[in-house]
Structure formats: C-alpha cells, structure tokens
Image 1 (cartoon, one colour):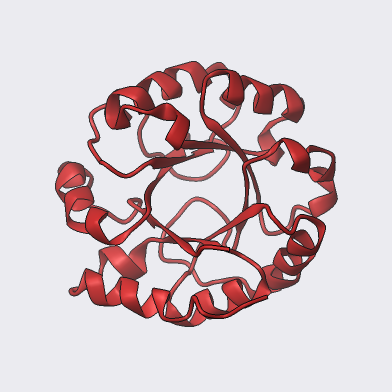
Image 2 (image 1 turned 120 degrees about the vertical axis):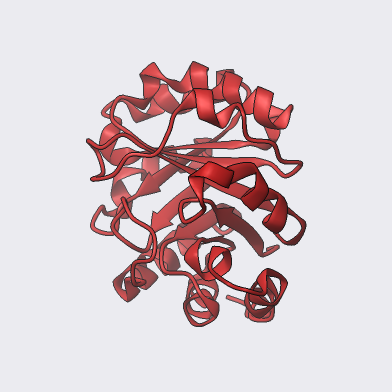
Length: 222
C-alpha cells in the first residue's frame, strides 16, 4: 500500500496557520487538523469558524477529539468545503470512546460527503470497532494518549497495528503520536500506511529533509 504522510498542525503557530500550511504543503499528502474540546482531552484548539479560513490544495484530515461529535459534523463538513473545496477528498475521524452509537455517526459522516474514520486511544481494544470495519475508509490508532503534541511513541500499540492489518488487509491504517524517522519504521513494519507527523516536521529547520527521512523507510513491507 502507498505510504501517506499527513502533516499535523497541532504544533504550528496558530497565529500563522496558513503560512505554516503553505510551508509544508508541497511535501505532504494531507493536512491533519486536531479539534479538541477540553473535555474528551485536556486541551482546546479551535472549531469550524477557524477551520473554514484555512487554505490548502491538499485534502484535510480532520481528527475530532470532542464529545458528542454527531452534533457538530454538519458544521465541520461545511467548513471543509470552504477550506478545501472538495469535502469528498477529506476525512472526518471520530473517537470510538465518544460514540455510543458509532454506526449512526459513521453513516452521518458519509451522508455529508466525507470519508469516514474512527480513532482508538492506546488502551481501547480493537474488538470495539470490529463490526464497523467494512464501513470505514480508515482507522486511526493513537500511538500517544491524545491531547498534546510532542509526546513519546507508545510501542505497546504495535501489536494492535499488526492485529488490525491482519483483520483488514486493504484498510487504511493511520498512526498518530510521536512519529519520527525511527518510530515511523516500526509503525510501517507493523502494518500502518498513513503517518501523522507533527513536531518532527513543524519544528524541523529543513522540512523537505524531514519528510525525505520518513519516505526513505517506506520501502518496508508487511
């Protein structure tokens, strides 16, 4: 499967978001946007009014770390249309932990014309989403506890990546948290094919070189 790089802007300067996006856009496949509400995770970012002002030719990969995401999906989908122009290219990811009626939320995302994905925290087992795998465009396996950038990669998630790849050979499997040239190699070998890269890229002086260091490990098969 193709290795995809999704650049997280969580570590970006929020006062210069479009400038930061412009600087990394040529080197990545998509832009990963973390939406945090201060309830599900101990941090806050922004909502649809800011998202719609972002401009990028690459698709957006929207990660909703919020409670009751079903109440806000339509607003975020409209914001994606304004920011990117084609919401069908964009993912909306919700957390299993916040969706007691997960199937309903997945269908809601699809009806809004976006790609549907579900995220699992490191301690959440795979069986909680197994009945939904055929409905999903992607699964995001968190390799840190969500809420902050710059955390260390949790290697205990690697067996979960392997197990998911065995269950769903053709599914897009994304990993997010602590990704650098060393941990990317481990994640890809375990079976992931989409890498969310934040601090490693945004804080690099040579962003092109940082991306090339990740792409160089993409030859690993599984």
